[in-house]
Length: 184
Image (cartoon, rainbow, N blue to C red; front, side, top):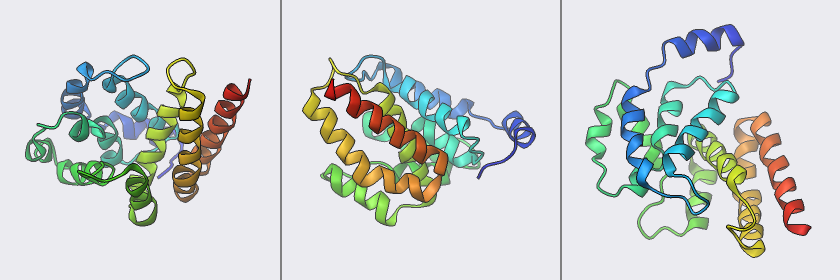
């Protein structure tokens, strides 16, 4: 999934994200607890994948709408499937990383870890890196941050080990820095 810079530049020249950006713009009104909105989070998740030179069209497109179905319940999944030639695969990936009704978070994360595709694990890792970058004292209690970091170590670190050593390094570094932040 990684390529050299010239191949990445050529790849990006042919990547069409506009239909997914338009759909993701529905997330602009969905606030995050720490401020900002879910649209910015989607853009950050895409940016993290691009930063690691991930060149899978379906994965990149899914990163833009990975929270859309959960956060905008009236999202027309069939409409998403018709966005372009990748629509079916993109929606299937988004559904793979979406919590099912009544699914507890540990069950959800374990499902992705134990039976999720490489793409779903990579998307969940990028999503969690974005979330860790936003994890700040003042918005969350020390206990909530500790629980989130423990959850990340238990479920997402093994996903990162499966998909990308550089992402693994970043997520472990973020965990360490966030633990230092709450211990001071």
